[in-house]
Length: 35
Image 1 (cartoon, one colour):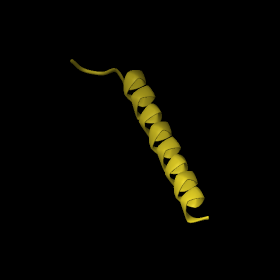
Image 2 (cartoon, one colour; image 1 turned 45 degrees about the vertical axis):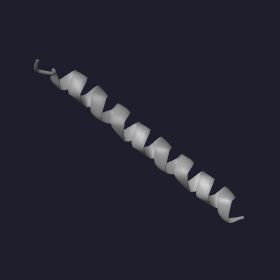
Image 3 (cartoon, one colour; image 1 turned 30 degrees about the vertical axis):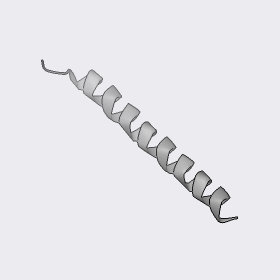
């Protein structure tokens, strides 16, 4: 099935947010680990 442009945009921004949250969490965890 073909996604509409809106759906694709929402999907992409959700993915981007998830990646950003994951990166932030990883930095936080490694920061705690190294202290």
